[in-house]
Image 1 (cartoon, rainbow, N blue to C red):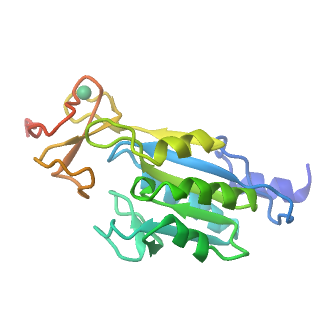
Image 2 (cartoon, helix red, strand yellow):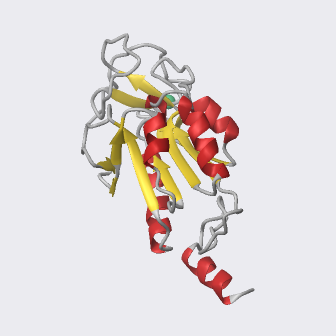
Length: 216
Ligand SMILES: [Zn+2]
């Protein structure tokens, strides 16, 4: 094992899901696509930020994008529910990501992938083919439990998939669904605690439901 390989190993001690990127890549090196998908409150943004921070420690050139619709916490950061942040740029379309990724960028992070148009599939493929590591986090289902495009397509083309789970607030099992607890037929209703709950398959109701009453 070379010195360089050892060095990369030492800063990527538990990265068994994704191979460590070499410090310098040639023009012919292919990139890849990673998708982090799950329900609300499952730690998707937190996992995305964790990977971006590790890439930064490895001195890789990073650009991060989020859809303009998601300005609930911060205009120029992606923010997890546990308030971990990473700088990001707001974009309106997937085409805007394509236009704004610089030639020497090595890692592209994209949060809230479900809010982008289907062109994100082509953009992710193009970037990966160009040698970029593309990491996309997003909700894989809407509040009715329906797969939320373009996430299903992105899951299909990704080399690496991480499915994150929240904890069901009703029963404590791993939760795969975002339960809406207010009346609205809109698919896009950006919200946070108080508007949605994490629920498991047994406890999920595929329309608006009453909030869970907690004993405390
Ligand atoms: Zn449950």
